Image (cartoon, helix red, strand yellow):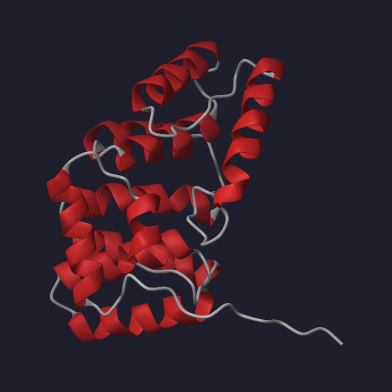
Length: 200
């Protein structure tokens, strides 16, 4: 849950990490994503893939971790390998391919990927965030602003703070590129009110 940067979910981080370490102890084919420890994450993924080189879930998770480290060229072969052996890929697997493309400057192709993901899962926040960025970088300001409105509807407490945590690119230029696109599209630092759902 922390990875998806939902506001007020920071309390889940320590228990989630403890459970992840337990899972790795039970299954050496697993790997733990990074928590401000990218070198340890890369080493864990390399170890997992050495044990199980065709593990599609590990390939996808490693590929997206590399994207978030600002290394999309290294991510693409892993993502291609993961998809090669699968006849049906969930939207969460399709997203990293679009993420690689937008980082590499292929925004037109990235937009198609993100729209395909959102057609299947409209509330998939990472895809909506990166779609906004891709549209802004294509100069499609009106479309990007419309996606910000949709994001606010799906995740009313999501703002630039959460985007910065969701995509913690090590390079300042890459972080600024994302933040500028989102801000120019109308996303703000402040989060909105909590959504209250009444069930009677």
